[in-house]
Image (cartoon, rainbow, N blue to C red; front, side, top):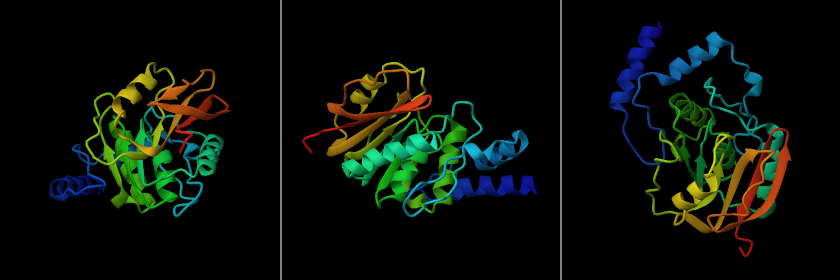
Length: 231
């Protein structure tokens, strides 16, 4: 029964052992179960759910939270993004996914390499969805989900990120300054940053001292790639 599943979920949340770079059960009970029930009640259109394009999890369809805040990156835009990253031979050793949503971008990068990833997402249902998606692709031990806003999150690891994704709400302002301040000492020498934004906006020329390398538009969305061209 649902009640029994809720009891088991609460029990598991109390006895889960904490460890680095793995999924951590949320402090609220049975968020995963509530998401699945909500998706069933609201008849969420699963055709908008992203599929992993390439790598070890190729073809796996991910879940998307029913939250109105979530705006999945379109398949064509993701294909264009990772095509540009492939041309740069991007390093997926240490991945950061800001405003992670469903976690599709970070999980796509995990699928293509053997690195670790941190997902920063403040929405509770979305954070729980990322944990479920990591389990779906068999990468729970390589992803850490941080349930905080990007504004409140502070990098605590001494390692420097080699790949950063940022997909803020389209109406956001000052994102380049925020990211530059947050990551000024946390980007590797060969680091690459991908910023998704509304197609009608012009991306900044630099973020975190990384220069704009390429930009692509697809429908309402667009993506800009930043890197140190010397590397």
